[in-house]
Image 1 (cartoon, rainbow, N blue to C red):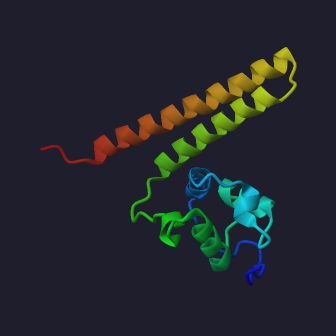
Image 2: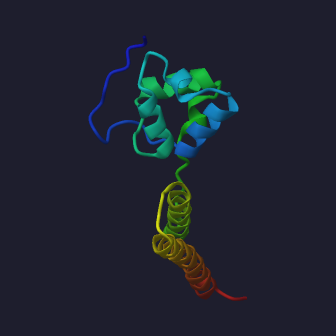
Amino acid sequence: MIGVQRGGRGSGIRVDPARVHEARTEAGLSLAQIAGDDVSRTFIHFVEQGKSRPSKAVLALIARRTGKPVSYFMLQSTPEKDPASDLAAELTTVATHVRRVVAISKLTKVEQEAMKLVELTMQQAAALTKAVARRQERSSTPEG
């Protein structure tokens, strides 16, 4: 067991959860294989879901076991992060989650239809957010 100490809530390194999951699946490893005897499978799952942040030691463990450099997992910071793009992506993610819930839940016909409306609303909200951002971008760009 490596010396992995627990940090307080909110502590840890900001990583790209999708990259953690991608590296694990590309390496053909299960959550248990990444976790080993060092951390829990649940913790690795939470890191992959963006619900937890790994410590330096846990990130190094993930990197070593997946054969990727630590830098591969780091969130890329962009100086001009586009909040509209972020919102559109998050709305699309919510729509996907709603679709998954409908697929695995035992819902009545009315509940299924209502959830599909929620999914559609999220998709339309994402599209609207993108359209508004494009319009604002065009209006702020000087025309030559």
